[in-house]
Image (cartoon, rainbow, N blue to C red; front, side, top):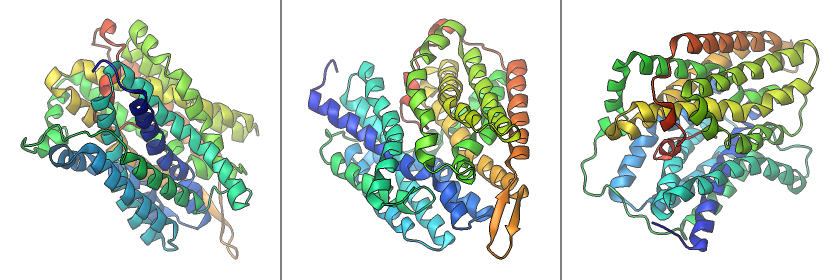
Length: 425
């Protein structure tokens, strides 16, 4: 495909924009909301784990869609499901009911990242795909603007920490479903082919673990999710506890910077190779948590902004660098499955374990300040110190044990990582 009509390009870009906005607008402040309504412990970890649980089942839904239904129709149906389930979740006063509706919502939502990629790549030249996909990142950033606009709409100081972001997510999902009706027809690419659970889950890619270096890469990548998840899933709770009024807008400064940092990633991969790119990402992870720790110990809240702004460096250099490394290590017939394996290990298993670990860590350093009013106070300084030490150990371990055994000249093109895998902004 050499060209595409401008109206198709606009619709595909809008599709990406809405798909990522509908998630970011409520997931970013979710931990603060749970804290406000008194959800703690295992139940809190379960609710925050709705996303990684959705990652684990997403390939199954995509497999069914790839073989039986047009992708844009499946996307529309799933977004309608998201609209209904996010709306019902916002109405719940029971944490158990909230978990059930969010879990069902993420079962519908997580497959959409692969489906939007499939629709875009089927209807746009390959070299234009990154220009369309970037609107997903813009949509994530726009959720911050959306939250600020909603303040005026709902007449409150902040909607973060309330159920309103879930209503916003439901409304955006409905708008996305209506847009999906206008998308170009994208027939199922594998219609009539046998459905293999082994292939969908990327289990054939497990053979790559026989390579010691690849096994080290996968294992350390999973462990990196423990400190990464503290910010990604629970950062809003910290910022709310520090008196930040616009949590979503504040945290999305990191995604704003990410849009520009991404431009540097291909250059770094081409010049230095995946190992040094990933080390830069891990160094930024350490900088983030040292900044959080220093901000609390030395009472310098300005350091918190430094911790936010390095998000793009962490995601772009470590996670995209890792996707490129896996793409170059895997033989052509296993490249897609290798990417699926990374998604399942990192954003499925790793984030799931990381969420429970970090919720437990926060609970350990949280006390009842006034039992009568059920006010809980968290001592964040030791939490950030522990996470900083973990990040430092992972940085050193990666430097010592991981070898860059792929050709650097083959590194700059990271696009295969977008094909059919879960990608987190």
